[in-house]
Every structure is written in C-alpha cells, then in structure tokens.
Length: 284
Ligand code: ADP
Image 1: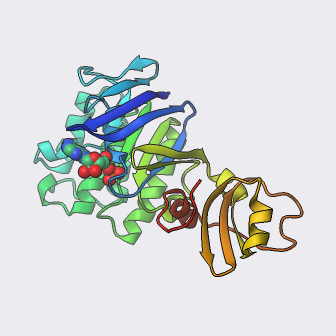
Image 2: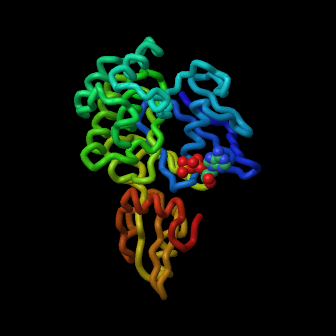
C-alpha cells in the first residue's frame, strides 16, 4: 500500500509537488500520466526513497519512506545495471544474489523472449535494450511496489507491445502495485486498470479507466443550449467559436441530455488534454 499525506517537494524553493495526498491500496497496474515537467519522476523517486521530500509523509506498506531506509518494499527502475558494465547474464546473477526473492525464472524467460544477448556487456546494448534489462530486473524483484518511470522511451513499436505483455504477465504472476509513468496514454490503456493524472505538481485525477469511458464526454451545439445541458455537470473544459460551444464534461449524463446537443465520448488522449488544459477555454 502507498500513502502520500500532504506531500510537498521543492527544488531550491520552487514547489514541484504541491500538497499531494494519495492512497493506493489495491494491487493493480496504474498509469501515472502527466506532461513533461509535471512532477512524475519527482513523485516516483520520492516514493522509492531516492530523495527526501520537503513536507508531508510517504508510507509504503505502513512504513514511512526515507532516504535512510536501506531496505524498502519498493523497486524503482533506476538503471541499477548502468553502474555495472557487465554482461547481461552476470548482471542478472548479481541482482539475484542481492535479493533472495528475485524471480530468476521470470528474468531468464524475459531475457530469452526479448532475445537479449546474455554475453553482451550492458553499455554495449541499445538504449531500448538497456531499459528492457533494467525493467526485467525491476519486475523480477518480487517487491510489493514496482515503479517504472517512462519505461517505453527508446523502445520501438514491437518492443512496446512486448513490454505491455511482460507487464501483464508479471502482474498475473505477482499481483501488486505497479505504477508506470508515461506521457502517451493510448497504447498502455489495454494493460492498466487505473489512471493517475498529475499536472504542475498536483493530482488532477485518480480513478479507473472504466470511469473515464463511462463519464468523459464532449457536448457540442449552440452555446446557450450546451450551457443549459452542462449547468449542473462537472465541466473540465470548453471551446467556443462564435455562438457554438463544445464543453468537455466528466460526469454521469442525464438521460435526456442529447436532445438538443451532440454528445460524444472523449478518447483517453482528449480527456487527458482537457484535464491538463492544453487548449484554451474555461477550466473548472
Ligand atoms: P516529469 O517526470 O513529469 O517530466 P520531473 O519530476 O522530472 O517531471 O520534474 C518536475 C520539475 O522539477 C521540472 O520543472 C524539473 O525541471 C524540476 N526538477 C526536477 N529535478 C530537479 C532537480 N534535481 N533540481 C531542480 N529542479 C528539478
């Protein structure tokens, strides 16, 4: 279980995490979605105990996280491997020796599946392959919390598909909390259950993907009619052109909502764009 209570983090007086409270208590694959600079890495590193926070408290499985803790229940995809320029198979053996609960069978199986050359030194691998080795080590660690920071950077399209399969397989084998940060949502949508949106150091959204599918809509038409339909709904954004408007809502629609206006479901990408306010328009 992960708990963040009023967490703040500043770099040189500039707030990067702003009073974040979040509780993740169910096993699942979670997507941490945010634009570049939103605070994803800072949040994940703080949960992993890689850096101290400025205020508040973080607990993992009930224990406070500090940078002083040698052993935590968290595995963070920090490139452990880059510190050792050794052949891949030796790296896996070291990882296994350092961690008695390391799932060697999973690690070797994944190494074969991704055709990683066990004899090749880590620094001679491509960026994608390096990330793959680090991800395998992270997932094989059998820890109760797995944090993968932008893991698909450097992967080609086929590696990305295989990566999502590996993630799902790892979760089936060891159900636990796996958080994957990304700024591209659509590809990972089939693999994840819950979505956390972070924007400028604040959590803007935390719910299931199913909730987004059921409650995220665009409503278009004459502005006064759109405004009448959305008056009591949670509006997350609005575009206005002349007398026409499109409002973006996250809510349960009344049965008669579509009589005078056009209603469409929002794609995940469009929902994200509205939540983090890329476009102009009214924000709630
Ligand atoms: P993300 O992972 O969402 O791209 P980060 O957590 O890496 O975002 O960064 C959030 C903000 O904090 C950015 O503005 C970044 O420049 C700043 N930042 C990150 N690390 C440091 C640091 N060590 N010192 C100063 N500023 C930092």
